[in-house]
Amino acid sequence: MVSTRSLEHGVDSAIARQLEAGFPWLRFHKELEPAYREEHFERSRLFIRLSLLLGLLLSATFFWLGRSATSPGAAPLADVIRFGLLTPAFLITILMSFLPTRRTLFRRFLLLTALSVALAHIALSLMMPLDQHHLAFVSLPVVIVFVFFALGLFMQTALFVCVLALLSYVGGALLTGMPTGQLGYNAAVLMATIVICAMGSYVLEHAMRERYLESHLLAEMVERDGLTGLYNRRAFDRYLESAWAMAKRQRCTLCVMLADIDFFKAYNDHHGHQAGDECLRKVASAVSRAARRPLDFAGRFGGEEFILLLYDVDQDASTMLAERVRNTVAGLRLPHRSSSVAQVVTVSIGVAVVSPTETPRSLQGVIQLADQALYQAKREGRNRIVVEEAADALIQTGVFKTS
Image (cartoon, rainbow, N blue to C red; front, side):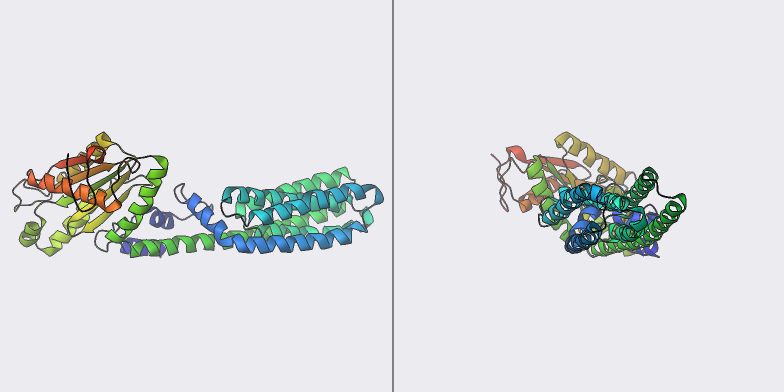
């Protein structure tokens, strides 16, 4: 149902393709997964912080109950685990949750805290006298539930932690001489808890990922042109601002292309509006093929005009890509008997190549530079490209000057 909806609205994007392909292994394509993880942890940060505080309180309770039952010989080592490992792990991770600029470090500390909680409680449980071991064992299923559902970990990560904990428990129990019958029963309980939690965690994460894709697809549809499926002018203005800032930071170039269908009004008048709409769709598809990289952008700028924003390409590469777009559109072989430059639909393309760190031009000035190049291409006869490089121009927003 979801994939049909995306096709109905003509949305061809990484989000729509991921929804259509599905994600049975709870992983998105490489261009989506990092963004999802970032948003997931930011959205869950407060919940994780509260869970860590709760975990610290629960661990302190188990510490108090277990300390009185721990054998005297094991008490010093147990205190090292309780107060030298677990308590600092909780406190440091809680502190990290208040530092939004340390996102990657926070996620790593969460994983280390999950491992510490699971392995420490297993070690403390195995330190109990055998006749009281069943009292300490009660905390282990609680720890498994905590790892799966309280720390914001993804299902596969939580499963890895808990399986490692189970293996550690079995190995430790064999070393401490636990009776085989008791070990088998306890291992079965832990295994059943892990399986049930893994199933619940899978369903929960799958639903969260699907909701993420659907909400972002809805946002994309608002910024898409209903006829061609390309992004609209509003989306371009928003994206240009972020791409400009990124190019400044990374000292990269930006290329803006404006492509205009030659004599499109005459095409509409001669072939009809339905044929005109189909022409726009096919040209839009041809234009969008030049923007296949994650940071590239293709949109409908208005009417019969399309815009491309290509990240980190120089003048030679921009010229080659613009020529490829022009040839691709001509290669559609759409008849255009009212055109004075060819018997098929063609486009004129204006290209502006800028380096945000080397030009005083504003964002709108870049678009104006591409528009000037497009005007030049039309003035020279259409069905051609004109490339303007901003490095040697003295152009300001709204005013074009050449030295």
